[in-house]
Length: 312
Image 1 (cartoon, one colour):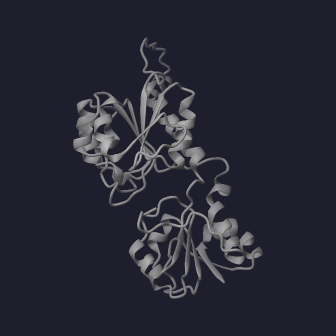
Image 2 (cartoon, rainbow, N blue to C red; image 1 turned 180 degrees about the vertical axis):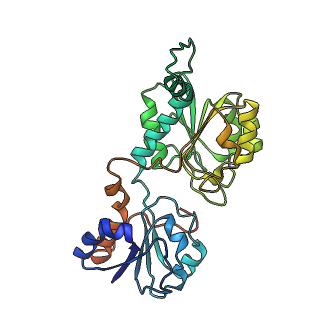
Image 3 (spheres, one colour; image 1 turned 180 degrees about the horizontal axis):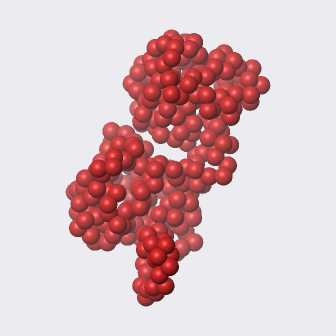
């Protein structure tokens, strides 16, 4: 069987894939459609696959993603063609969880001012900073990333609340609320941490109406998908003081336009979709794809197969 991936991935993992008995093909990321059809059975990649005309690839039977997100693909087409799709769910839980903590601390300790003072060699003491301890956090979503983030925040003595559609209990959350309960409990929360997949149901889950329900001075962290937040409503909420600070790793359109007002807001911290980065990124990046390549040669026990009805 033939495996197609970008040249960068091929350089990293091609030899390991060949040892499993596959033929490795690669495409130039700058010109991914140099060929109309590479003849591959398996396609491996992440958001770069958005640029390749995989619909023209007649032999394609499997897509193994190195990313968690899948919303850049034509899921209707993949489902119709009965292409098996897997994502890399769970691989980046640890580094993303650290970025959640990092974002909250940046905002609460006014990190931008600290850095600016250091650049100016300015010794300027402050007698006030916000705390993490004693606060209430709501994780929007209770998947593996949210669980990893909650575990790390537990040591800060924060009340850990989760949200999922049914209110199904998940450890280590102190409470988990359902969709029917969401709007009722939003005003109680100090921190709102977005950990939702990008689907039709989660699109603009945090919108102007829900911002209005939040307490004044709430902090928002988004490490999931930009589409889960209405960015115009977020800008308004930050300007009004409803949102005291926001740490954002994802956006409705990426790269974030230089015209976006988010760049100019002093209490907004912007990361260029890098919360998955870590020292052992290579091992994490290829984890699911490699396991599924082995499964295809052996028992067919695939990992992280996408449920098209759920959208993740």
